Image (cartoon, rainbow over the protein chains, first blue to last red):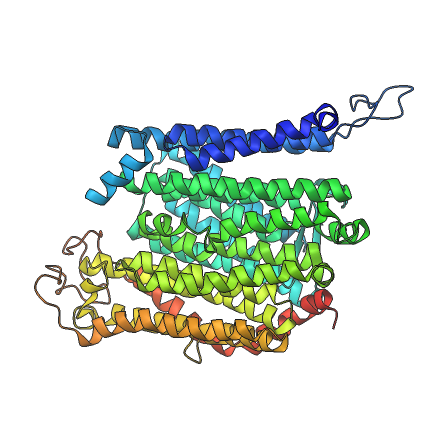
Length: 119
Length: 506
């Protein structure tokens, strides 16, 4: 157990982020917190990708004299794209939340559902 | 002519930017740009299809980087028909949206972005690239759903966004597992490297589970369909037509790609439990979607739940892994897109003519709007699967494939679902033709509008802006295509044969 914590802590952190994010999306009633949870979930995945790129004794992937091992650059590039996607998603989500808040005056999902069934 | 492959994706994205820039000066130029762009995309899609018919599989290496390192776009027997479908439906919805709205360049910018994203998902041969295009599709779809006038559509859009993002993130995680197991992202290369990594490896199994689960959220299979009815029913009518016809369709196509090209039937031979799980999920979705559809009173919600059921059938067609069932899956995928898009368009026309939106308000519609009522009836019966419509052909092939594969419960489920589908469409048809509109259900002022849309705009009651002949023409074309495709079953089968023989090795 201690061994797992000391050698695989990066994966554990990724899993904790994903699980916590997913729990916030499902369990929290506040719309902004749902979006934060969504971001946490994605961040967990980003961390997972980046951590898999690590190579023991690897150097940054810039070609140098006398270096044999480099860390894999591809996951970093992929995640750079995924981060851009994540930022756009957050922007769209927050735009919608602003519109919902200005109309209903609340961010609580259950209150909004109640107001929608009324009218 | 492999340039057409990349143009089918680039043209709409370029058009989207043009619409945005032109909007700064000419705020009414969006429609013309969208129409021209969609015509251009339809032309490239036609070229792609013709090339594939003549020469088989075509690939385009982006920026000259050769796969597996570079990203390639692939047109083959599976993707070419889907691209043609996307281009054709996009053009039809642009025609429909001219009167039905929403208007403005912002709408058409997002619309063309969605169009480009859909073509990208259909054509890409790289699993990470597919994630990016899925997210472009998703982002544009969330914005379009939220473009309705009421705040309700914003709530629906946000719900769709959160669930869609979770689905896409699971897909990304699955792509990560596959990359760790194999070190490649190219689909064709993945299929070989996954076999080399061993189909019983946990990484490979995890990759399969995450990729497929992520896509099923986007397809909206029961029980991860919860975003879909609200999104379809709250969106503006034109948007409902477009996303119901294409967004889930392209996600279901991606499921087929992942099953056939990336994992191949050999994976399922090594892991029969994966196939069983997928078939169960599909079967549950087929029945649950139909039952939920029967419970609905609002037409758009009913059609939305009906999609949950129909996509269960498409996924079952792919998961059966027999050549007949796969042909049925593709036919039903395309047929459902035409039928469901046509039905949503017809519902929009009826709402604009008479204001009727629920099953009870459809009472006596045949007297008030005979053409619209006839179109709803024809499209509905096609979806039920009355021969010779395309709905029948797709279901027939899937059922035959199920029996061939020895999975007779799936054939039974398809039959049960046909009966249930008949139950909810028979109710609408009964209302339209045999019920008299009582004063409290009839919506005032709709009677004087001719069903051919001849009434001048402004004389129409209800919440629409009036109906133009183009809107009705779009529905008529959908109905005609639905019936015509019913006769083209064997032609589609022989067209798909080379691609599917490669997959199933017969």
